[in-house]
Image 1 (cartoon, rainbow, N blue to C red):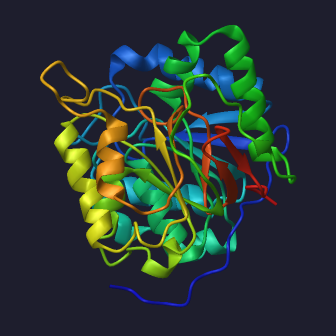
Image 2 (cartoon, rainbow, N blue to C red; image 1 turned 45 degrees about the vertical axis):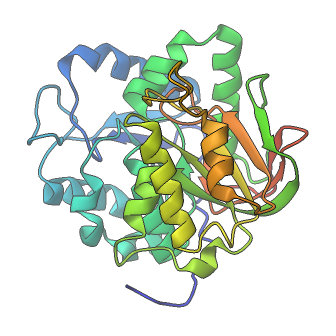
Length: 331
């Protein structure tokens, strides 16, 4: 396992109107059926004031197994984007199952020389964790392009879409702290309390997988952190098992708070067969740890996503159901 000095927080440069944003296949392929969704995502980004370009590997129907291309090809394209000074942000087209194949091929020096926002969730949360561990880069756990900006966003109300566009635009262009994220009645207090700390997390299965690689976050990076996580698919027992892994790893003994996203397509949650609810699973594993838990927050596969910038200091008040970004994500 790589052990180096903890890097300083590395904020990307703030975007400006007219800057170039590239949508890229960082993991899964583009199904031809979802080309209209991708086109709508481009429109959303343009409405925010950015120029948009599609990366070469983002071609409908082209794939290698379950990926947009071979891992080394995806890494090569990502590195080209990281090195290109005209490219100011990279938005993943979708998640997938490929990031583990090229974690060791990313040009780390290009990131430290010219840090850029990389947006995405699902498999992309693995990139956020690895790049944050290695460089201190703020990762933007936020909506991907095709099923997110061009899919879930379109099903939301016009008022919610406008709110999200303002939020994302401010997060990428503003150098002042956003403050409280827009809460909804769905947010739930699973354990009362308050905490302040660095926001660390992603898809829970990717957090667990990352900690099994040589790019794992050192345990000290979880000291006083606010752990956020979500999950899609599988079974409720898998979520319980992932939380147990975090317990055995010592992570749950170090964090100051927890924020849980909206679960999506998880079998065995609160079914008539006396299965547990997600709050019951979480509190069962936490035991008597005095950690505030805010649940059912809008990030994850259920979409649309509130942005969760990895590494930024936040304030959590579970009882008041608030989560506030105390620092800007860009500079």
